[in-house]
Image 1 (cartoon, helix red, strand yellow):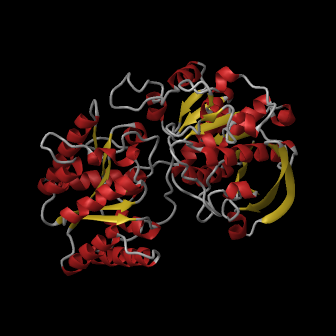
Image 2 (cartoon, rainbow, N blue to C red; image 1 turned 135 degrees about the vertical axis):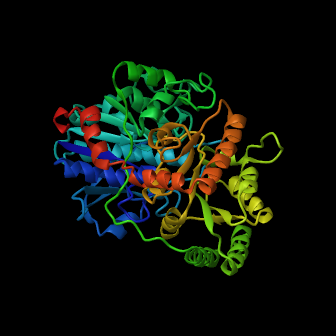
Image 3 (cartoon, rainbow, N blue to C red; image 1 turned 180 degrees about the vertical axis):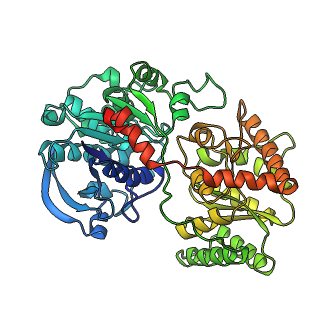
Length: 519
């Protein structure tokens, strides 16, 4: 079977990954190639990545877009390790945020304006690549998130892409909260501006909350043969309205479309996998982690013309800990977004935030380290907490080697996501034998068994969830200190868990691609 994936990110290219989407686009093609399938991955080059990969230039594409025909450069390379063929499409619009920058931060009054325009062109160029038979006959076109969803619109409604209309169309929802909504008209970042004269069925692609707007993700949900989410629990949760089950975000306005997809047998939830091929890294000492973190913060500081307060506080804290390293580390690694961290900021009954209550529970020889960056207001919250609590270390940034050390040394990993399509942090922590304490939603519910290989909590609203989070944290600490043998059983159970990409690939073939021989 020949499968072509369209995506905004690809973790197999250095720097071309922002989050879990890039991990999936890196890993699932390798597993599918291992089953004998032929895989192509197409993404924008963002005027940067073709030069990093040594990709070979190919003849350019002529792509109708807006009121003109644009030239889109094409380059190609094959991953030697996996055999996956990768294609990079390039033009100046793909670097509207700067060379190599995958996503833009548009002002609140024009959300997604820059990204929607560049990904609309990407969809048209990727469809042109297939329509000109550059990749040969394709059996499945697999779209990842709203960035690739424009291809579904064009394949279903634009006769110029009729040659590829018989391919099976699949869309994966990595995060339903991001939908790329833009106006139908009267804006240079609008459907009629990108594709003038396109005839479409407005009722299946209009946003249900903003009927004068085009919703790319809704279009893909309604136009694709199969709709896929990255965990079974998330597939169930998004069929509910935001109000129908308090505590879950639900379908983000698209629950009726997802309910219809489920009733038609088009919606599948398949859990992402995790890589287990490399040998587990050896344990590091607290002294080694303190030194590694200090060196990383010094590097971040040197990269900026001014010393950020978060880095200054972290360096001061690490200098103290060099004299007396902590004995036990509570850990968290996360993008700092409301989805991932909102519960830390919730004020519970005693008038303190959830994070402050967690820090107050820590014994004297325990500390909490959080590695991550993102929303400026959330960064500010963690920086302020770090100034007041000497048992809290906030490392504002990201480092792959440092994250691996944190996964390895940690005693308990915290992941209180408000919703979680799948999650990778819990899998990486468990792989290192570190149990997780997580909100019982989405992929966290599918991967962590409460009091067996980790700990979970829930609640009917944010206030109850935050209180349950602190209560479960208190219970886990008590178990760690008072029942060391039971604690070791939980650590061993976490380390023994396996979430295989090979298993995921078999389910892709059976449930998404219609290949019944895969089982």
